[in-house]
Length: 260
Ligand code: G3P
Ligand code: CA
Picture (cartoon, rainbow, N blue to C red):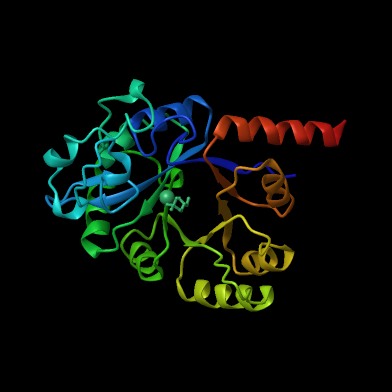
């Protein structure tokens, strides 16, 4: 069995408010290899970490500020911690620089680009050039294929993965057809791999096809140990989970039992 990287989805977001410094710090305390965060550009060209295009869901007072139409000062006034627990009251939306600063040596970050504008990626490059995070400790991920292409073009030295979500409509598309379509698009992106939601559509055939094309193979939404073990048996490179410590311990327990 290989040993995949454990990536903390929006930080240790099962216990701390997603996409905040407390959540990322907890993830590293829980020995996650990488954190994953979602990023947008503000009206005054600052990169900030938040999942949705506006603040409503993570503001206990339901304050709705659209990130791209608000300044950093305006966004920093919003408490994005107490919706989860009063002990996080006063937690603010972090900037990209604030997130980069807390990454310990040897650890890394999956940067999910939510803002598909080219100026976002230009700004990302500018900030990354001011920091010394090793390139192999950075991954860029995005759902939008054009964003993946653009990111790889502007930051060729950074591994970039296409995010894909298996979509199950009432009438399920045949697995082989879904896989073929996925691979067709992936090959046009000139990127480094696939980051896909854990689902039964991931099988040996898909992994073989990824490896034949020299592509990394990652999965997100992995919160059940049985999913993780199935993916590990398929040779997965990283798994993204909301509970990094629990996931690592559960995987180790299963592996230890198999060797017993
Ligand atoms: O790690 C990928 C995953 O974060 C994509 O989904 O909606 O949680 O950003 P979402
Ligand atoms: Ca994300």
